[in-house]
Length: 338
Image (tube, rainbow, N blue to C red; front, side):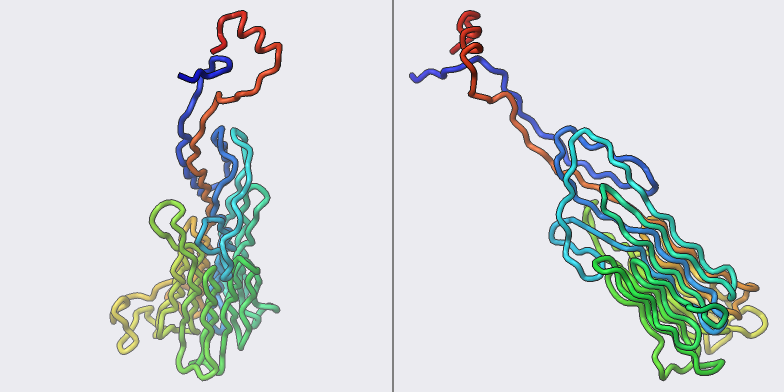
């Protein structure tokens, strides 16, 4: 039989398991010893919704970037390259906070904060306001905030992270609507020029990822609303966007027929603007004057999230077949050469 020639060796083989780490707040990723590259989903905080004097606009979703193969980043972009790392090393992770909703009609909402990992950063979602009181009335962001006032265009999104917000329209006290916030996966709805009644519009949809297993949408834009009353509720985009306010100003705060809808029946109280869902980067919903509450606030933006996936690594160690002459001599002398 042929004989193996060389020093006797201990061969080690094994598997380093896949590991998924979700950061709902700022922290540190400590990579496993044999990890050389990772997949990621990084979502910034969403922008807050407005409280407008003429209508209410939704906040934009936080910027969305992904390197999960076959999935998408925000703004219609393809997945990015995996991020190279050194095994056994620490990496700071920043999770952006959501922006604050406008506290009353004469104030802007604020933009969301950036999230980042290993030199990869996302832009916070755009806030919004009403240029009746301040100009300009909308902010750009990862996804843009919705327009307000007489006819503001929505804010723009950041390339490869999110989409623009929708435009507003105001023609008189009963025909108007705010622009909805842009989402990571689609633009926020605009109020059409031919609007009839006080209307809310839906925020842009987010982007789905299966990095943790089942698909989950993140990065939805905030819904908008009309002035004094919203005869149609503006829904937040799938992915954590907050709904716009829904109400009817009749002096009591109750919703009379025929303005009731199945989820807000006749006699029920109006609904204030909804915050974006935490750790989705969703935009906050818009509010306007005339709700049951005095000077109602817009919805806060949802905080962001960072998810890191370390792939499984199969390894074999101790199989070198190269020796120098001094090593050969020592092994032969010790009887450890086969």
